[in-house]
Image 1 (cartoon, rainbow, N blue to C red):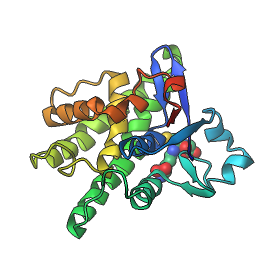
Image 2 (image 1 turned 60 degrees about the vertical axis):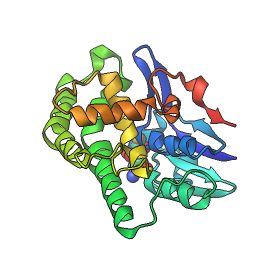
Image 3 (image 1 turned 90 degrees about the vertical axis):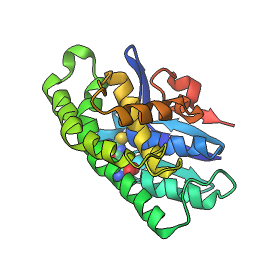
Length: 223
Ligand SMILES: N[C@@H](CCC(=O)N[C@@H](CS)C(=O)NCC(=O)O)C(=O)O
């Protein structure tokens, strides 16, 4: 069985999960694959114990084991799942230009959101409210408002239902944004296309596995 290494934890303000590992969990769900989650403590992400470094050279999540094969990096894992498990729904188009657009949209999600604005908002939620750095969180929200959301809004202007038209691997990369902004109760009224898009992602069956309303114990595997 596929084993996904992630970090997930229940808090009174919602169940928090690694954004990058959630991107991979969504693909496992969308493709209908059987898997279980190996839940690592948040402390492992900075302690980086040797057993973790043996599987991911940077000691990050996600990494995944599939029948003896160990794979790291959410983008690489997601493409591997798509290419190796062709029996599930196709999450990548075959046209080279469409594939390029998908990778471009995913790259933006990785660099601008998951590696840029989103952690400034998300990391403080792993601490109790009194210990959160409000200024850092606001800086993350401002990056979203001024840089990231305008680009997403423009991209969604193509009229398709999802970021690249039909549902694809790229949408898995935007689902962590839906998750984070749900916890943050972020006001998206100036970005109506993005608001509708993120809501659509939340309404997919796959979202249950990463929803802040789903307790860790209730989404640790899929048969
Ligand atoms: N490029 C990597 C980034 C993974 C990543 O940064 N994961 C975070 C958790 S969401 C992490 O492990 N952070 C610990 C660290 O940066 O050392 C991927 O897409 O998998």
